[in-house]
Structure formats: structure tokens, C-alpha cells
Image (cartoon, rainbow, N blue to C red; front, side, top):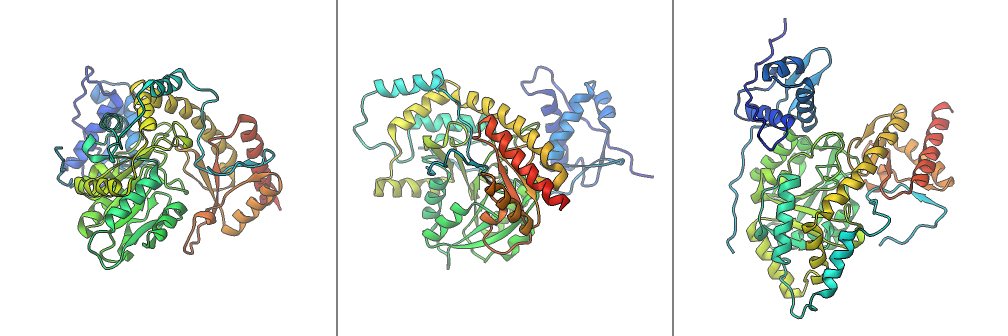
Amino acid sequence: MGMPPNSLSIAVDRSDRRTLPVQVADGIRAAIDRGALVPGARLPSTRALSDELGLARAVAEKAYEQLIAEGWLDARRGSGTYVRDIPHAVRSRRTSRRTPQPPLPSERISLRPGIPWTPPRASEAWRRAWRDVGTSPPPGAYPDPAGSLELRRRIADLLGRTRGLHTDADSIVVTTGSIHGLDLALGALSTTDCVEHVLALENPGYRAAAALAAHRGWAVHDVPVDREGLVIESLRSVPPGAPAIYVTPSHQYPTGGLMPIGRRRALADWARQTGSTIIEDDYDSEFRYGIAPLPTVTELVPDRAVYLGTVSKTLGAGVRLGWMVAPPALVDRITETRRAIGDHPSVPIQHAMTALLRDGEWDRSVRSARRIYRARDRVVAAALSRFGELRGVGAGLHTVLVLDPAVAREIATVCADNGVDLPTLAHSTRSPTSDGGIVVGYGALAEDQFERALQVLVDALHDRSVS
């Protein structure tokens, strides 16, 4: 006979600004963290919990779905919902300071991931932001190398609202995008005292990050990934003293893995124990369909992490603006270097971005794009699920269909012959791996292009399956 389910003592306040599912999920997380719910503990059914709390059953179901997606709970068919075995929460002390790709031929369609949808016409807020820029006095002096104080305050507010990342303007540096932020971080970390500069990197992973590390003279150490992102156990192979690891935990690029809370905590613990710095590229974090984004790794270990963000997936890749959140000592090193080499952020771009954040344009753009991506995510999943395992469903701008590497190459070739350029995981793989698959990006396509490309892909997969 199984263990009886644990009764949950959760306070629910209807006057609280948090929604009821969020309050219930927060209460369960807190119970796990303080040890009231131990690994393996069975939770009440959603019906029993809703009766106990006097809430609709849908509230309990939504809370459980969120916690299962984050990796706190494990749903076992026919058995119940159980607490997963995750590392105990240990938070570092937070410190604070006082003070274009070429255009493709029109007859071809590209399913390359990471290319966002942009509105067909400028919004009133967008036009107003650039009118503000045009009526401002031309910038005479060089700007603050960290970025304007007002913009950094707006970014700190944005990260607090949307990512639960508690930071302030003094910990933020304005960049031209994630790769620029990575470059600044590697440059600052290069001054640390270590025998060899090694960047641990996901494999498959972001090739531009590996290329940048090599350009800076860093060695790249590949760490494998699975359906939940970076494999933490494989960090044992990282050379001792390696100063940094680059990860994309919100939607691993390109496999689409979502790193659960247990792995995030284990990664934070590894950084504390080794003295390494986590460089967290929060890729695709704005786009989750059905559940809220997970907390950042940076929030768990702020003194050993650099957080990278960008507007390229929200306001457009051509805007060229991003940000990084870093420990104070690293921020000082970065701003001193930028001042010395004249690497100053653009004043007009910062001015416009400040206005767009102030007027809520970022939020509106995210909501508009999210509706389109959510619909396409469901269409892709419905069309491809019969051909194999899908990864990355429910988030981001792309989905991966896991296939044998040779089959993936064959499917990509057939699609190319029919006018559809389809990347494979091999394009993002550096050291050998047995994993293979195709990457289906659907962000920037017009509706007719999306439908045609998907039909070409489905036909190729069907023909291969019956041959």
C-alpha cells in the first residue's frame, strides 16, 4: 500500500496581487525548500487540494502543471504527484554597489531558428520614440560606458517584472546584444589568474559563442546536453580552474531543452564550489506557452553569474541593443575597458529604447509575437509528433524533431531540393555526439511560407517513413 498523500498548509489571500495558481505554487515551493515536503513525498490530488483550500480544481491543476514543468514535482501516471529530489537551496550573499544576415532568394524559404517575427508596420509608440530622438539635442560628449542611468533603471524594472531577477542599475551594462555581452564578459574574465582560459559550452550549442571564444584565444570545452539542457554530471570533466561556462537554460539552443529547477540549483552549486562564472544567455525566455518562465540561474547565484538579454527577439534583430547583469567587480572592469577603448553605447538607440520601455511597447510586442508563436508551436507539434520525439515544444521560436543523424541529413537534403532550407543539429555540433535531428524555426515566416515549408517537411518525412 502506497504512502498517504501529504496535507498541505498553504495560505491563500484573495487580496494578494499574485494569481491563485501562483500563490499555491509558491506555497508548495516554500514547503519543499524548508523541508516540510521531502523528496519522494506524495502530494494530494488536485481535487483533494482544491477541496482543502476552498478553490476551484483548475487552480490546483495549474499550480501542479507549473511545478512539474519547473522540475519541482514528478507526475506518475496512475500513481500521483511526487516531490522530485533536487539540491537544497543555498543562496549566495548578494552584493551591491553604491554608486545582417544576407537576404535569402525570394523563391526559397528558410526554417533557420532564432529569426523573430516583426510587426508589418510601425506602431504609434515606435514612431513616437523616434520622434523623441529627433527632437532631442545631438549628443556632444561620450556617453556613460555602462549605458544611460534611466535606461538601466528601466531594464532593472523589466527584469524584475518579467524574469524575477532582482537587480539594480549599478549591476547593469547596456550592450548591442548577447554576443557583445559575452565578449565583454570574456574580456573581463581574461584578467583573472588562471593557467588557461577555458569556456565550457553546451554541445550542440551556439556556434557564434564558440567562435567568439576561439577569437579571444579561449579554449572551448564541450559539455553534452539532453532533453533538459546541460547535463550537470558531465561538468566533472571540465578542467579545474575553468573561469566560465556559457549556458542557455530557458530554451537550450538549438535542442530546445528547458533546464528544470534541480539542474539550475546544481549548476549554481558547481559555480560556487569551483569558483567559475556562469554566463547565462536567457535565450527565448520571453516566449513560453502555458507556463510561466522559470527563475534565472543568475538569481540563484548572483555573485558568480553574468546574465545576458537582448531585444532582438522582441523589437527586432536590427535594433542592436541588449544588456548584461554582472557582479560589481566585473561591471567595474567592463566599464573601465569600454571607456579606454571607446566602446560606448549609442545615445539615440538608448533614448529610443528608454521611450519604448516607458510606453509599454516591449510588453505589447511580446504579447503580439507570443500569440503567433503559440499557434505555430501547436501546428508544428501536431504535424511532426507522429515522426518521432519533439523537443522545445511549448516555448521559443523553434522545435526540434529528434532523428538519426543520417536520416536528418537526408530529410534536410530533400527539403532543400524543394526550396526549403532546414538546419540539422549537426550544424550546431562541434564534438561527436550520437544525437541527431532537424531544427524547425518558424518565427519570421509569412503564413503562406510557413504552411508551404511545413507541408514540404511533412511530405519528406512521410515518404521516408514508408520507403
